[in-house]
Length: 313
Image (cartoon, rainbow, N blue to C red; front, side, top):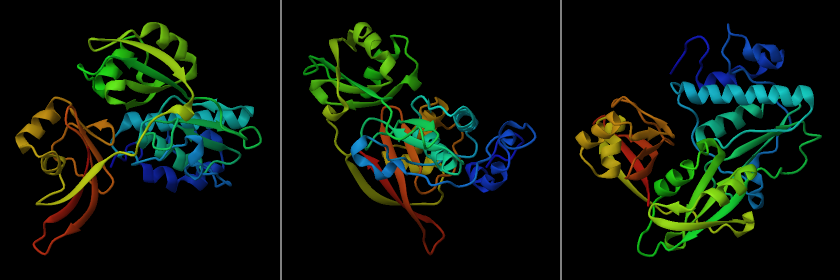
């Protein structure tokens, strides 16, 4: 786990909560970790409001993901502004690890309420609204939905096809939330409201299929909980190349090759080392092969590891 000046692992963020509460200015003091959090306040967890489209969050940031740590730093600086100016600010769509670590840190802040929304309860990518509790009394309208339809019966398109087509219009990835595939019907897209009209006028093709886009209310989203398949494997180590090859049922050499090509991610962040150690709760994704989650880990009598792997279908 990183321990250099300016970058600290997530455990440091929460451990430093009380210290940062004494002074907002230490948040950006370059001689300290950028992740100090504030003292506790009565915090309303987004997970207690399933009807509002609030998010279920996943794994925390791995200590060596400097980009993700910088994102959390930026969000905490937003909280500082929101508190001092008594205004409501909104993030872009965040990846699950950044989302979770941000919410864990924001819940320590004084005079701040934070609400995460992704459009529907199972959303992975969410936006956080931050403001003084007296101002943030409801759920801001910060997520919109689009329905993308076309004749996909003979030319089915993948998540990557939809994502590539939308990004091809010039939109940044952080402006997009989840993409809900609907097989031959098309897909439903979560997006920031200010870009709805632009996408409707700009997106005319996904893959080789001509499409049309219409705005739909969030209540019309058609989603189902992800289907999974669990199984156990016994491995000599918890390295990503070992568990990844077992989980995706490919040779270790193919998994290593995918790592070298930048096709493997752990908790939504690319990994470059074959010996990256996984832990319970980590999500591993490989381009073109899907995702799996690391479940319970037990040590066998012979010193090996019995690992539950949960494959998303």
